[in-house]
Amino acid sequence: MCGDATKWDENAYRESVLKEREIQTRTVFRTVWSPFNPSPETIVVASSDGSIASYSISSIISELPFGLSNSKTQHLLGAGPSGYLQGHDGPAYDVKFYGDDEDALLLSCGDDGRIFGWKWEEITKSEVPIHLQGNHVKPVLDLVNPQHKGPWGALSPIPENNAIAVDTEGGSIFSAAGDSCAYCWDVESSKIKMTFKGHSDYLHCIVARKSTNQIVTGSEDGTVQIWDCKSGKCVQVIDPARDKRSKGFISCVSCIALDASESWLACGSGRSLSVWNLPASECVSSISTHASIQDVIFDDNQVTAVGGYGGVVDVISLFGSHLCTFHCQGI
Image (cartoon, rainbow, N blue to C red; front, top):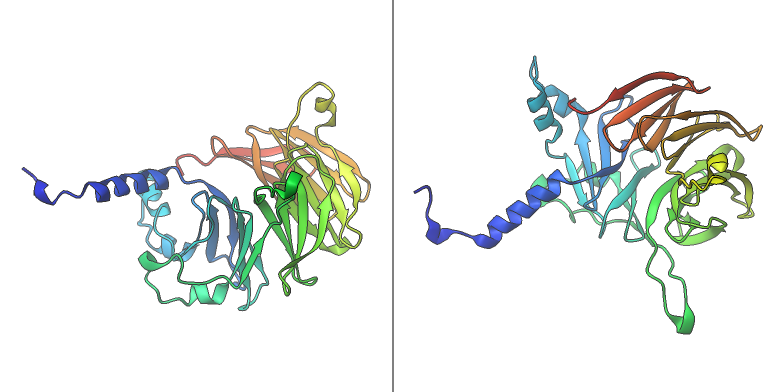
């Protein structure tokens, strides 16, 4: 016999099994590097269990022994976080920083239709042991999407927030919501300054085009729309899958990205990546990828497309030629 059966705790055992399964099935939806560092040091992740966690890259790397095997690598990459917040009821879909100094706010949004903002300095300087963290830091910002009135005054469910963007100069946070609208929130008053209506299905992604005081949204309806932040009106519609749509094929816009000049826009739609010259309103390239695209990133004259299944990453030149493809599995 190995152990005393009279002290068996069935509930504790069940909870431990459920917790282990939850960890194994957790999905990371978005990541962001921490601000005011000369080189990347801390990465913050938003996960499907509603948590917002930070990880110290230097701490993990310092623990890597020479000649590391794959099994050991996976164990270390699964190491515990340096900071932990139990942010949302339901999945946390996006995370951003508002500001780039010691007064920066860590923002997150999720399936519960809320945007939370925490003081980053309070998180990094907390002396609460990691196993007791979660609700140890209270948000200083709590924004909730509006509900819509139906017949006889019935209210709709609170629509989820799938992505956020920030404009610190304008004091604004932009959200891409599940009710087909984008919202502009005033950080000081915590109130909605403007609502952008025009998409026919819920929004997946949003970016701020600060040089022109515009935002860009991507939707389940398969289009990208560019909005003027002064009038709230759509000034341009981009349809990456227009030719396919005429054949009955519908593919949502899952992600978008602007380059540093804010003149080039990359759109991920299914297993297709298109790059657009915004001043000319012209698609300069369209290329098929090896997996459905979940995120895109500009790096000089290259676009990196990250696939959600199979861990596929495609690196593509600005004008549409594949530079390389690799799989993240087993790293």
